[in-house]
Image (tube, rainbow, N blue to C red):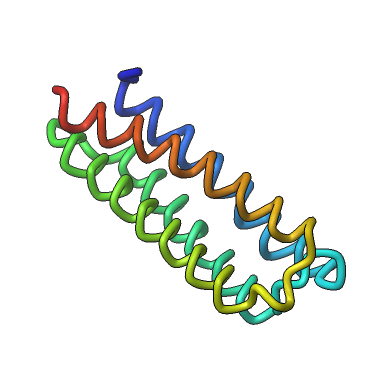
Length: 124
């Protein structure tokens, strides 16, 4: 699937805001149900905030070189997935089943978006 770059920046930005809210508010509030330490959750929530800001700037300001910036956010999202996997492995003894399910689902969604972003960026 190849989408318009502006559409991908909006989708990514909204998804990043949702991830930041879930990680930084919901999972922190219910840490005992998910098992991931608060400090790790806050760190993981901070990154999508940066991504959302990047997406907003790209959506509003970038003209003519969108594919370069789309590759950038695609790679950043891929690195975020790797970092999330590292934290899941590092804290596996603390994670509950619900915690594992949350992170697996988030990784699946973000990785699917990465595939679309990079496919779009390299096809055009």
